[in-house]
Image 1 (cartoon, rainbow, N blue to C red):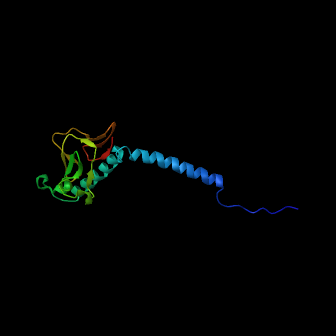
Image 2 (image 1 turned 90 degrees about the vertical axis):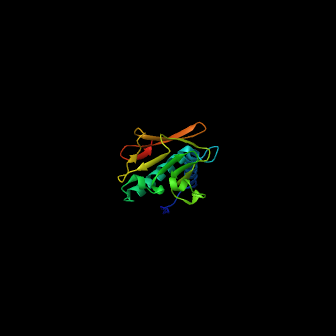
Length: 157
């Protein structure tokens, strides 16, 4: 006489432990990319800088101000040690409240210009720059860069 077997559903204990171990390994590797001795790495700064640059670029494209000389400081990218973001945000007393501001604590930044404008098509306007415009972030022995090409494409490089 055959004994009917129940169909088991769900994970076994071994499968559950293996999944937890794998997720732990992935999270440790991911955390090490974004955290270092000072608590904030240049990789994280690079990713935020790309997002802020694109935000300022899109704001400029939607501004419809044809003359660059009349540009609002919210549409100009300020690049200097201690601050990366719109020129407006970098001059505020409490810039942390702004979405277009990146505090660069213990991170050095180097760029061919300290102020970058964009035209209505999102292309960078910089007479003294060669393309692609490279902005480099350095902390201890780590470095990461973003590049802005002549058509305005912003990417890690």
